[in-house]
View 1 (tube, helix red, strand yellow):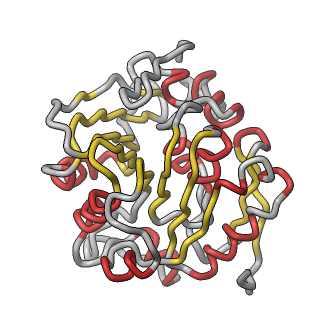
View 2 (cartoon, rainbow, N blue to C red):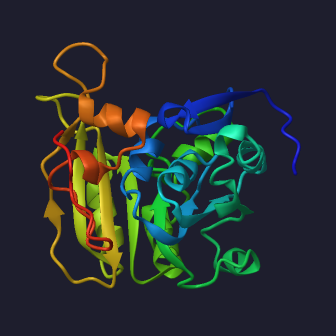
Length: 276
């Protein structure tokens, strides 16, 4: 196991069902986006699933805790974050699913590197992705190199990430991705010819406010039409408390399908069971 030569924190997710180890500073720290991304798949998810650019592994760990039929590969290129993910698998809270999680160090955007890491074409049933989202040169990057690389895309932009996902996921397998809402046009372009039958779920801070994030799920090789779904609201009209549905995702391990009536997963026949 790698050493972690930086200050870290132990962060509980899903009401303590998951414990992640994250750098205290200097790197991107996962939170709401990672947990929402994992909630794109519910407890009945199964098969081999890759968390692409996993960071410290919050999304993949949250899915592994929820779905006993799934095995997860946390794929990340930064050695310090890989070490955090490896340490997290030793935490007692994660003992029930740690044997279904593998940590792999790899630059996912390089085909040769994927092959060297035994991440072979079409060897995954599903993928999760919370990639960098700023185009290079269009924003002022963080002065911290690790944080900048987590947020700023390389020359190929988002297309490189979706190309890699399409290479890794089998035909009729699925991809779930979460990004800022203003990147939706780039996401749709990157999915063209790769992932179809898209379900696009806008995430709004509260009613009456523009969506801040979009959760997108697609099926490789599908020609079905895109569905733009009614939005999911995170907070009430005042205050910072989460509404009951989002709170169930964050604290109880509920999936999107559990709390939002129009989010269903055709892969497993999941449908909503409680109102948002």
